Amino acid sequence: MSAHGSTFPQFRQRATIAIEDVRLQGALDRALSHFRDARGGALAAVPAVEEMRDHLKQIRGQTIANLAHHLETFERNAEANGAHVHWARTAVEASQIIVDIARAHDVKLVAKSKSMMTDEIGLNQALTAAGIEPVETDLGEWIIQLSQEDPYHIIAPAVHKTKGQVIELFEHESGETLAEADIPALTAVARRMLRTKFLAADMGVSGGNLAVAETGSVVLVTNEGNGRMVTSLPRVHVAVMGLEKIAPTWDEAAVWLSLLARSATGQPLSIYTTAISGPARPGDVDGPEEVHVVLVDNGRSQLLNTPYEEVLQCLRCGACLNVCPVYREAGGHAYGSPYTGPIGAVVSPLLFGLEKYEALPHASSLCGACKDVCPVRIDLPRMLLELRKDQVQQGLVGPEALAERAVAAVMSSPSLWRLATGLARLGQRPFLQDNQLQLPVNLTGDRRPPTLPEKSFRQMWAEGNEDLK
Ligand code: SF4
Image 1 (cartoon, rainbow, N blue to C red):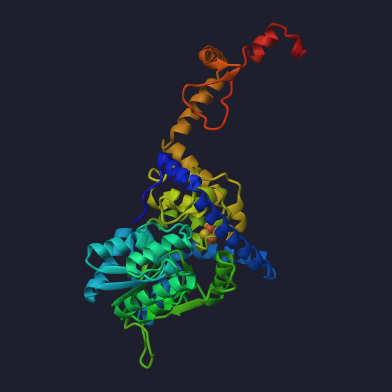
Image 2: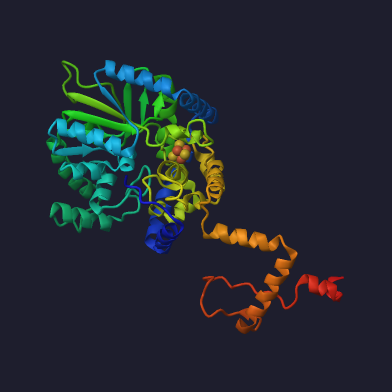
């Protein structure tokens, strides 16, 4: 798994780096406000869009409540189409299944299209360790692979990269001088280089935005032609996806697709919506000889019938990231997970461990903007609070929580309160200058530390201070 964790010090350190990077903040502001405006315009153009969101919520809720039934239907119909369906309990198992398929076909090169799940299971690392070269072919993912970073945003993995940084990466990779290249020229370089990979790849690996149980189909939603190349040129295609991404029928898938691209990029539909129902049939002009679908659990089934079941309704549209005041400042890498922003703050601790991701339940102002924009109205703030509650119940409390507990104990005892404030008054005296606290070390940044008045309210009241009457 490519997740690295997000403890309090890790989150603070990475967020500080992002906040102090003026260029990055500008780039994020521009990109995220573009996504927000595009979503707003696209949804405003849909009649009865709120009812459509309610309908999608109902569909997702009912599907997750009957997940096992829909998955069995999918498996039956996919196998009837000639696809092979695999079940992976863990990330390691999922990667191993894909490595085994590659080995069975003597695969040396794998062309990949964008997939959050392959990031989650650490597939590139597993393939590389097995001597198989994985190549990302989505432009943003390729940039991320070349720079050896993690994706920054669910739908825009390289949103934080400048043109200059991309030029450097492409020059290094292609050996060409690209200093004067504009964006179309850079895209042409990527297309030229990646085309050779598509043609040489023995196996294509894609994600799956959703699977449709009634026809055993995997649906891919992309804006670049690479998805179709990956799934049709190599002789073996493997689709890997979370087992919650299932729609019982095409009617339900249609509602899902209507809201997915609008919420993600503001498009009525993405440029390519591809349904894959098994390998090429006799007479087909292209298509793989074999299709494998790997359905990954990796902690998802443990969320069923818990206060977190609702998170399985997520479409991974990324809309909640674009409105989150924490993500917009702290940036994607602060989360230390393939899943960033508010949805990442909930699923990362749930799937990869609350202890490892202790900071994420607190990486929120609980303003509710994420729930407002979510096409499925997922109540992420409620689940962030549930996670905080779990942390307290499991004794996984950070330094702030320990300090809060100590303060609560002092404040709930009048004698302790008098003792603590009396000591604080004595303690501050050597550092008072013109009634301002001047500490030898800066503990409060730009903020002026508060001072305690010479006398407390109780003392003044007891002394019959005239000002209080
Ligand atoms: S939680 Fe909602 S808004 Fe966020 S990625 Fe999932 S579906 Fe989209």
